[in-house]
Length: 633
Image (tube, rainbow, N blue to C red):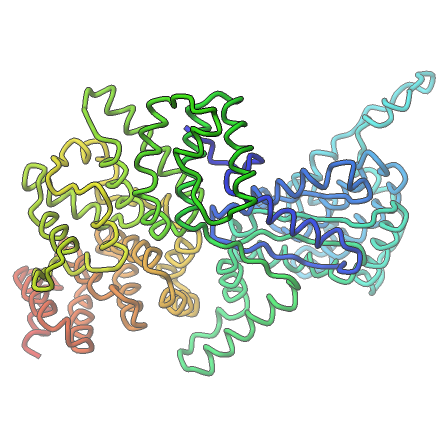
């Protein structure tokens, strides 16, 4: 198994990105700056930022201080802005090089944070100071600060303390803030910037780098609060913020906060929403840096290096990594394959498990790259699941082929609905589905006269699924029963696939089934530009919502809204979900939505009539009666 956390072991060649960021945030002529590291969830942002933090802690950068802030850790607290400001100040106040020298200024700045917070809460919490909230676990509780607030027992006056004892003494920030006699005034924000700049002068810091990670895991309100805290530092010299996030989630948060009251669907409203979100991001983040998605060659290399990490000794793995790093510096585009690995180890015979994985990694690299969008975390999760299934097969005494298992799992992790459909086919035909044979023969045929005429197979005619069907090995003559037995946890009608859905798709799903009409419309517009895999994932979640909760209108209404916004596949997904749901639990209005979509889209006319006939057959139900009227009308 491979760890799913960020890592300092670079198997992706991502150090080039951390080196680039480091060159910017340590350049005095560029500061102050806000640097946005943008990429999909699981795309490697956290690993890059950990590499950056490690490099900036070396002696070479002794005049640079790097502070790490994980936004998600503060998700449960009411004010993320206070959390960020307080954590930055306390880390500076406890820094081993200059903490004692700047302690008084840190206390004064913490006091200013107190006043700014109290001013913001004055309407609801008149007279309740920030420190009181800390003591009671109230609005301004900050975990990192609380950890430092415990009273410290004072040594006896006669007890001698050496320098190291002083360094290790815990600072009671709570008492220091409470005992500070300074008073607030009307210019707190401006004075905060001024005093923070003076603090940096006294420390001799040439560059204060504040890394903010996992921002895209936070709720919209927390994201906005964190961005507002950053704005306080934008004009402070020698500061650099490095923000790691999926930009779509940040844009969605800004839209949710500032545009959610706009429920119009006219072009002017859409343009106003777009301009507001765009301007907000551009004014805050001066340097946006979008991480490129991994190419098929890089995915293949990544899979091979992960296999080496698992199957080789640490010494041999380090040898392989050094060889790959050297070759990559001369050629960025070639995959690092079996021949190069064996050559780096002096031609030694490789372990059988490693040989097997290297033999099929090239075959699946292209489909994985497209299906998982070159996402390293998704790749690693798929490989971990594959390893577990291989172990399950061993325990159960089932003989399977690695390359067949890999191909099926690629389908499972890229097109879960089609995977479940394939399971239905194979279960009804003892493991050898006729539809799969027909599809494989269609995509592999050089005869233009060969075609798939079955309408039920229309969902398999997308480019990515055709590539999957073309991928070796062919499985039309493979008994699939054992393979699907191993995957039976993923073939039911639950939301089992949700853990492989990107954070952005989950945000859209939550907005679509929510009650705020503005957020629902905004999510529908964002869904209209999703790539194929994410679009199918969103439709799959909504289909499962309808099938599991047919008496709730949210799933049906969401799919109807997406269909009205011309989201590919939304109408057919709605039809499939309604047909699978028990008619007795469907609202009557479903029949009229089905008829409206059939009228709007000519290609759905036949399916619309079939579905309404199906609903009418349940004559005693409300939706059955509504279908009867819809057919007559």
